[in-house]
Amino acid sequence: MTNYETILVEKNDGITTIRLNRPKKKNAMSPTLHREMHAALSELRYDDETQVLVITGSGDAFCAGQDLKEYFFDNKDSVKQTEEIQRISHEWRHQILNTFPKPTIASINGYCFGGAFTIVASSDIAIAANEAKFGLSEINFGSIPGGLVAKAIATEMNYRQMIYYSLTGEQFDGKRSVEIGFTTMSVPRAELEAKTLAVATALKGKDRHALRATKDAFKAVDIRTMSYEDARAWLKARLTQMTYEQKNANWIDHGIGKFIAGEYAPGKGAAPKAAQ
Image (cartoon, rainbow, N blue to C red; front, side, top):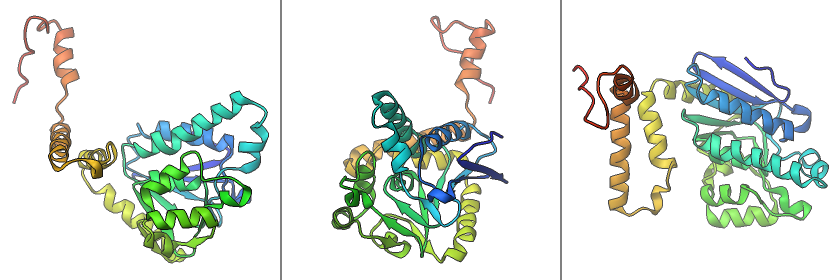
């Protein structure tokens, strides 16, 4: 397993936990952490041992957002470095995590600020400690919840609450995060690890094809904006996908494999039927 500088990757019976590990910086996201998260997620998405992915933080923080010094200030004079780390940061927190092929859980153990909201929004399930502290503090240093943050909260949070917390920078706790629609549930901090494990274990027991098809059904497109007719066609396609994969149909081995073996020519006719 790869040794990282800013994250810990732990595997336990099908459940893989990535722990953001900069406790002295409240697990703020530095350029190094972004690169390591990008690499870890890119590897784990194809890892057969990983059936469920959990993301949490070391110490008393989940993630304090971007490291203001290392992410912004240190790169302010280099357009190349700024754009490179922005691309990597955006890719892993949205494109890779949001479309991760296995179920994902954000286990929010403490402080969760700014850019960390995107990690929560891209995770399938978000379990917060009651005592966790959330905040959109960008307004306090003369900025806005930019990048992916505004999109994340606009998608997940109740609209009026999104505006309120963005304008005031006021903190809220884990219980409030559930009330405004940002997280799935909250439990006392002492019960967070056990609850996360229980949910992960339940997910691990589901059919992996059905899990992925369900994620595709709800996350690949915004089904809320579809007409009933379009949604029906879309969901039927996802069901067909799931059924196909559950039966282990493999058009590459069968169709292309038989072509390579010289058993037929695709331009002249169909491949011989597979044995039933």
